[in-house]
View 1 (cartoon, rainbow, N blue to C red):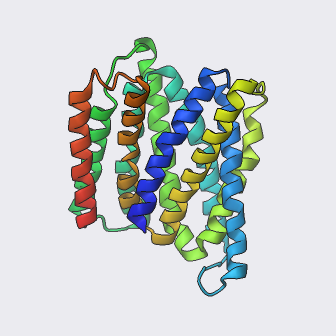
View 2: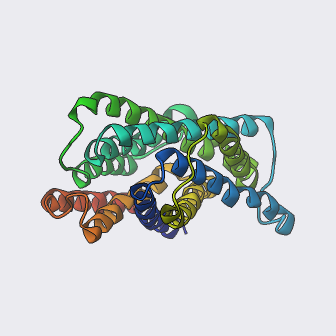
Length: 285
């Protein structure tokens, strides 16, 4: 269940990203993409609160103040982290920003130890380090924004820290309060904060279909990852498996003839092998 869910979410990430990139290419603004995706995430997550009414014995639903505050913190961190991600991607190529965003994998393992006192064995720690190395190789490519490198580094580090905090809070509190309580609260907070992004022009008609499809897919796969963490509590393992989205992204770019995937196939193939090694280590654990 964990493996299939995380790997499936990784594939959906690449497919959704392709649609969103095309929508931006056809005139949709990055802010519009961010706003629409936030609302879709909330739309997928809020109905989870009704599941305990249908299956009261199968789903834990235990509201409490610590979990409520943690869900609010996770929602706010996700909101700010998504802004940081857009800023990082705008400041530099994916070859710079995406590997830095991959630091989240190691940070989740470290935060689990520091904040939750969760034992993380050498298998998962080694797998986490290999994952970051793999992400660096998989996303290597020319940088056309050298002047904004330092800004991209700062935004990406901020996003990685915030996203890692989201996963650790989910692991620590959704298991005790129930994912049917924690996740709706978290994404309602995300939706409630979205108007703070301000107004933006509507997407042109040619971009609306791409925006709708991509936003729906991205908006589904992100809550799916959160739900897996909330149900099973294996944030580090799930993040390592979820990192395979980089392989799918490279494949999609190669299929579309973008992203210099063919030019840098040697480095990216090595990155894929490192990522496979990380997944095997995680599964062995």
